[in-house]
Image 1: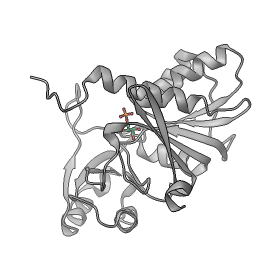
Image 2: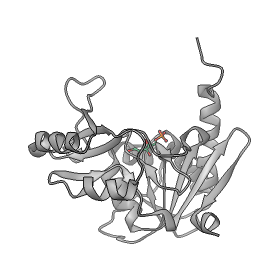
Image 3: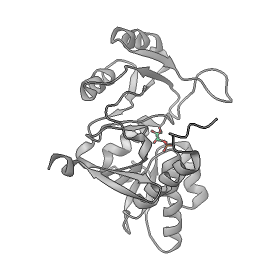
Length: 241
Ligand code: 5RP
């Protein structure tokens, strides 16, 4: 039976649509933008496709094969970081957002390209439903790990007190293989007291391509939190006064 205290799926979808459509409305004519990955980004892209039909001219850099395929389907013009190493903004989802706008990302295993695009963007617009906002980051932190280094990285995570779990495929036997040909280790640390410090340590482990903690973008981030009947924007400047 459904837990009545949790928002039902339809309601979650409404929240995601609110956030996605709001973010699409922040895109201006002529912009080159990063296109994140996931079900909330889907709504932003759906709205962008509509706006493009209405005359909006933009180009997008996709962060995954999934997003690239969807963009082609929706006729959103695509480009690359080779052509545009600097982007006007990036729109992406997140798995958890804390009150300082630090994130955990990577449920879709697209964290490496998502981090590249976030770093290249002047502004990062994170779109989430209200269930993603937490008091402290405590979800599993995905790491993209090159297969060669899997076992040393597992030992390293255990030495930090974490519990690493190799992500398995659904409708595929064996591990998930990322768009870059690597594995994903989901690492549980409980409540994360110092996310910046942990991100630094994890990122420096040999064989770790990237870490799903996103702490370095807070100053250029706007988090759009969708609710059933609208959304609110959270910005670093508002938090720091
Ligand atoms: C993919 C991601 C996604 O942006 C994140 O998992 C949120 O996805 P969704 O909007 O479907 O909840 O980081 O790697």
